[in-house]
Image (tube, rainbow, N blue to C red):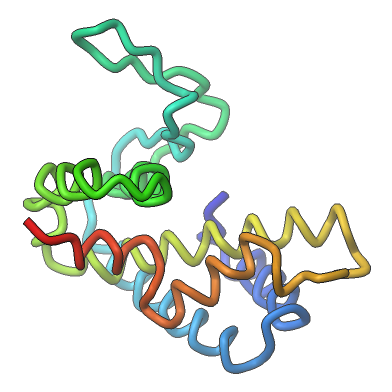
Amino acid sequence: MYAFAPDLLEQQLATARRIVGDAVVVRAGDLVQAGLDAARSAPAGLVHTDVVLTNVIWTGSAAIPVDFEFACVGPVDLDVDCVGREVVGRRDRVAIEGLRDALASTLERAGAIQRLRGYSLLRDLWALGKWADHDPSLTDATTWGPARDLIADTTQSGWIDQLLDAEH
């Protein structure tokens, strides 16, 4: 879901260009590159890459992740992208503020915001490509969720900015 390989990234950017145009793709490419540069300083570890509420079993006292289909070694803060999308997408102000507080030390690390923007855009590009594979005519493609997310992430109005703007 995250195109860390340059050739795959170029393919995804080419697909996005057909849908959202040059300006958005250039901005996305710049932000992704900044994120990838910042990711070089992040420690590596096992990441799930699909941490959504449906991939967690809740025991009442613990959250146990399941469905490790996309698990891999990657930057340790990569999973913040999935969690952040899930929580911010629910538009629950208390949950968003709680997540921001829980992530405070992560968000303060050098390069964290650049990494998160890069991860988010990589996931947007992946999702947009999947949607385009299912509708190669690109009918109404600018209205697709991944296209809207890509535009939001390049204009600093995506989930990351909503999280950062959460008031305490």
